[in-house]
Image (cartoon, rainbow, N blue to C red):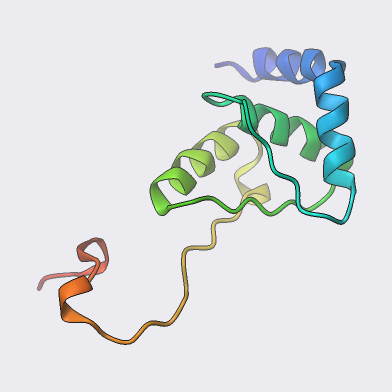
Length: 107
């Protein structure tokens, strides 16, 4: 999608009442739970709010696959320097039966 088209979508979305309510929820200090959006709807709402509010936003998702989809969306909608990805970094005792093969390099 061309940048002009995306900017036009941001302009249209920023004038909607749903977007205004979404931004009001983000301004507060509490966590915000969003439901009912499909596809890249949440990504467009977040990118529009980010451009308007200039506020750091943390998006916590259920798994790494879902995070990768949103990362791709947000990098396409915003500058890549405005989007950061923090992979899971919890510590867990070594369990050879539960090794995540996506993180294993065979030499």
